[in-house]
Length: 562
Image 1 (cartoon, one colour):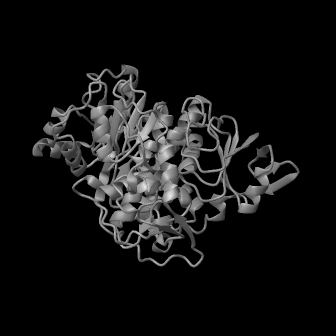
Image 2 (cartoon, one colour):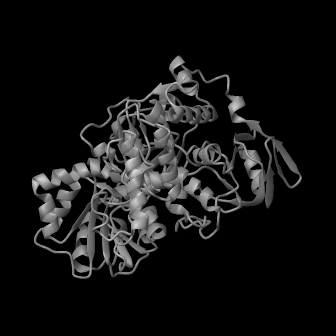
Image 3 (cartoon, helix red, strand yellow):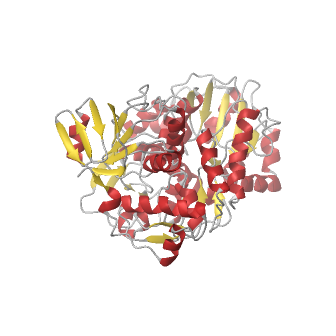
C-alpha cells in the first residue's frame, strides 16, 4: 500500500539511493550534493529530485538540514521510503506546516518501491503517485490511523491552545507523526535532550527563534547537545561574527525556553542519567543508541525539532522502542573477538554492525568473554549510529536486555577479521603525515581524558601538529579539579568545551591541517565530508603517538594484520 505521510503535489526525476543517507554530515547543506565519502551515490544532488532510499540513517540533525535545504532552494521535491522513517519526514512536515516549503513524503511497500525505482521520473499528487504507465492511489497516513490514536484530556487541551501557541504547534506535530507511526497513545517522558541546537544552517535558528517568540517553555528537565561554538570564547578564538553570533544565538534561544546549557553530545556522562525502563526523549544519534542499549532507558531516535516539541509538552508517541515488544533483536551478528584487540576494536565493530544491520536492531554474539568499559561501549554505540537507522543494539553477556529472545524471523550475519581489515583501509585513506589529532566525538569522558594524559606523560605535542580534545562543561570541571586538565595542557593538548568535532569549523578547526587522525569511528566516517580533509584512524595510544611524531602508523595493528 502506498501511503502519503506528508502531502504535496510535485514532479521530477528520480534519484534512487542504494543505501540510507544521513542528510546531516552526508549532504552539502548549501547545494544538496551528497558528500558522504562512503555512500554509493556520492556526488549526486538531492536538489529538485524525487529521492528514494530504504530509510534514512545517522544523525538526528537531518530534519533541520532538510529544512535548511528547503530555505536554500536545494531540497528534494519528495522523499520516498520503503521502511519506517521519522527524521527526514519530520523535517518535511515542519518545512511545509511552519514555513510553506512543501516536500512530499511517501512510504511504499517493497514491491511498489522496486517498481518505482525502475522508472526515470514520477509525479505525485494529493491522491496518486504516477510513473511511466503505472499509477498508485495514495492513502493519507493521518486518515489511516486517525481513529486509533487516543489522546488524554490534557493532550486535547494543549491541541486547542490551552498552553499557548508554541505548545499547541508542538502537539500538532507530535500527533501528526504519532499517527504516521501507528501509535495508539502518547506517553509521559521524564527528560529531553535537545539536538537541534547545532547551527548547521540558518533554518535551525529560524525554527528555535519562532518557537521561543511564540512563548515556548519546556515542561520537563531538558539538556542540550554540543553547539557550534565555544559559547564563552568564540570571539577570542577568531570565529567570524557572521557565524558565531547566530550559532550562540541559537543556543541562547533554547536556554530562553528553559533548557539547561549542558552543551554535550554525551548526556549520559552527566551526573543525573536515566535509569533502566525510564521513558525519556533524547535526540543525538549516539546518545539515543547508548541510552537504549547500555542504560536500558527507552527513547525513540527523535529527530531535531521533535525533541523541542516533546520538551514543550512532556509527551511522546508511544511507538517504536518505547514498546518492549519492539526492542527484540531482528538480526544476529556473529563476531569473532580477535586476540589482542585494542580499543580501536569497539568503534570499528559499531560501524560494521550498523552496516550489517542498517534497518533493524541486532544482537551481537561472540563477545561474552570481553570486558568493555563504558567508553568502549560509547564508541561502539556512536559508530553504530552512523551506519544504522536502528535506535539500539544488544551485546550478548554485556548489555542489560541482551537476553531478549530474537524475533522468529531473525537471520544471521557473520563479521570477521576480513571485515575489520577492509574497514581499516577505508578509515585510513589519508597520507602518513598527520597535522591534527581530533579526539572527543562523542565528547571525551573524564576517564578518557585521564587515559590520554597518561599516554602523553613526559611527552609533548609535535611542533607541526595540533591535538584537540572536545568535551562537555561538566567533564571540563572534573578534570580541572583532579589535575588532568593541567597535565594535558602541559603536554600541548588543547581542550575545547561546548562544541564537538561534528559541529566544529575554522578557525577553531586548524585551517592548515590537511590530514587528521582520530580514534572515533563516528568522526572517521563523517570527517571527509564535513571537513574536506583526509583521515587516519587508530587507537587512543596510536593517536598519542601521532600527536607527538606527526606520523600515522604505517600498518594496521597486529590484531587485524594476523
